[in-house]
Image (cartoon, rainbow, N blue to C red):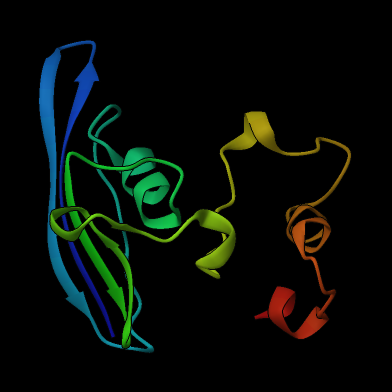
Length: 115
């Protein structure tokens, strides 16, 4: 189970907005994130992975608290065991998606890449 509560101001071409997420997701669930350009999808994933600290946030993965801004808890990205595949500008263009994912693994495991 993952618990996510985020409130973070984002700056868009149509003005300042707030990214707000309050969800509980059961293990094994399939989640689809979609929306208009500039709505905060990439920012959401950066917050989840630890690359962005939100204005307010709480993220708990099973029994492990990854983020709790109220109590000044912040687990850095390298300790979260969460992968983030950047949009195409950060991929190696000479590799397939599978090869890009495998390249990022510190311990190579084809079972993880094949899903």
